[in-house]
Length: 134
Image 1 (cartoon, rainbow, N blue to C red):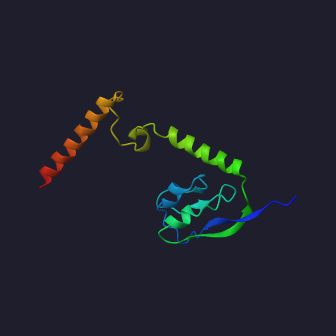
Image 2 (tube, rainbow, N blue to C red):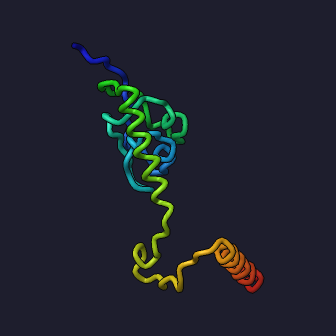
Image 3 (cartoon, rainbow, N blue to C red):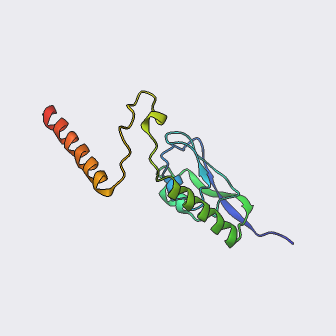
């Protein structure tokens, strides 16, 4: 039995500026790379949806590499896996893990009212800093 062949997305790595716009719109997480660094596409996961091509500001993505077409079930599994990962990434990562010189978080905010108050306090601090700078 011969498998159906379809075009896959390909990134011209010399022209990629690492903006990350393509990664955000990819329904199956087929695009990997870090911000401000070159990105690449995993052909096995690419569904040739054209989302990345339409959002790329440098037009460095084309449908040019050949690959085996994913079945509807395989595509759905990849999309579901991506959605689950994104739902789990809503947890807050303490800045001390990302930036060693950052001050530790004082406390974990639990209730919605406490979150709202924390946001209001942060906005007030920024406004106060802006007023001092004038």
